[in-house]
Image (cartoon, rainbow, N blue to C red; front, side):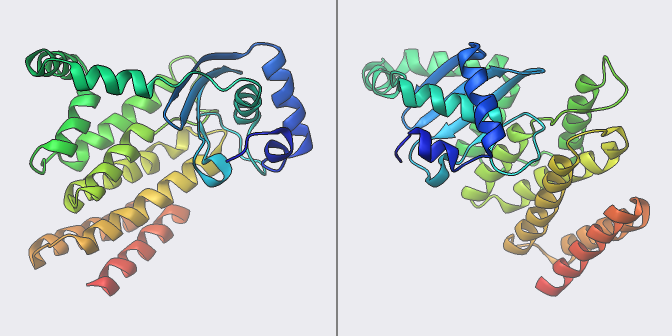
Length: 267
């Protein structure tokens, strides 16, 4: 997809475009990298935000961890695209591919094992891709959501920005791609429940949390419908949704009730 000023302007409001220009001129973009068609960067705003765009996707399929909830894309995405339009960064993909092709097998396996040993998130992604279907319970993913909220409330008692849950959504998507529907459902369930239980802490970027909660809940039901579950297991999930509908605050209880109706209608 062509990256030029008119194309970027079409993605945002005029005010956001001007702010994106200012951010680029002020040198707020750090660690701009390219791997194939994927561009990643860190952009300094109120916080340091993670931003990514995909050169091969219609509209660049951008993602940013900032709390922007207005029309179009945020100023951080605009700043990154303007920078790339001026000078597309060097692509690391070919160099990495050459190194992978020529690396001794034993050395490569040792390197991967060492990285997996010290990075639990990478280890779980690795198991999702190459291992047998894991059996990590939803509670562990819920605890990870709690941990993310705890990190964002260390200085203030409320959350004003958008927490990045992509490590969980990416993991669930990988399980879905490998037809590990039950484990994907566990991730989505833990994510949706964790957000629901921490919504009282949210004092900004409400749309981000509401949309992430709804998407996770919808995909939880979709994965249950795609999994080959026995009647007893389905009944357990039905009871879970009934319990959540009773316990959650009103506006979330309605969403759990709809999810329950969807699951029962699919059954």
